[in-house]
Length: 213
Image (cartoon, rainbow, N blue to C red; front, side, top):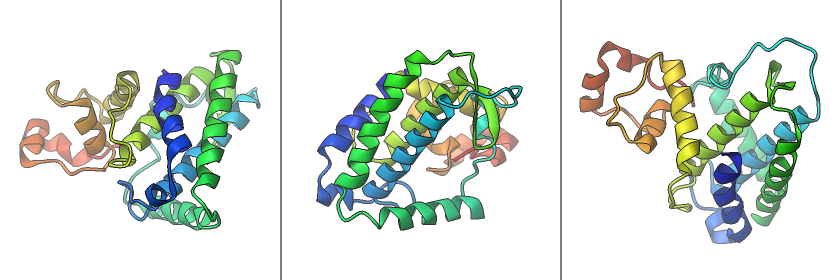
C-alpha cells in the first residue's frame, strides 16, 4: 500500500519545474514547494522511527495517532507558518523535490526490512511499525489531494481506503456508503465544507466534522 501511495508523489517530485513549484496547493498559504518539504521531513521522521526501536508499551494505533491533529487550531496554523519559513530557504524547487524523492525511496527500501510488530516511537507516541506505515499511507493520500490541480490524478484506492478507515474510527461510525472516498477525505479532514444535504445525512453528528486535518 505504501509503495502505491508514494509512487505518484515521487514521480511528481522528479518532474516538477519552477513554475509548478510556486503553484498554490489546497493548504492555506502553501505552495507546491512547501508541501514537498513537508513530505520530505515526514519521510525523515519515519526513517528515524524505524531505526529506533522502543521498549515502551504501545499507546497509539493507526487511528488514534491522528486524533490530536485538528485543522483550524493555533497549532495547525503555526505548523503551516513554520514549514513556509523553512521552505523559503531553498532557492529552487529542486531542493525540496529531490529531498522528498530521495527520502521517500529510502522509506520504501527500509520499510519491508523492519518487523511489522516492532514498537517504535514518533512524536512522543509508541506504536507498531505496521501502524506507523499505515499513518504514512494516510499522510501521502491526503497530501496527494492537496497537490491538486498540479497533480491531477486520483490517489491509490488502497491509500484512500486507509484514510477512510481512520475517518470512520475517529468519527465513531462509517460515513454514508454513497460518499465518494475523495469527498469523504476532503470533508473529514477539513479541506471542504459539508453541503446541506451531507449535513442532513449525518444529523447532529455533522458538528463533529472535520475529525482530523
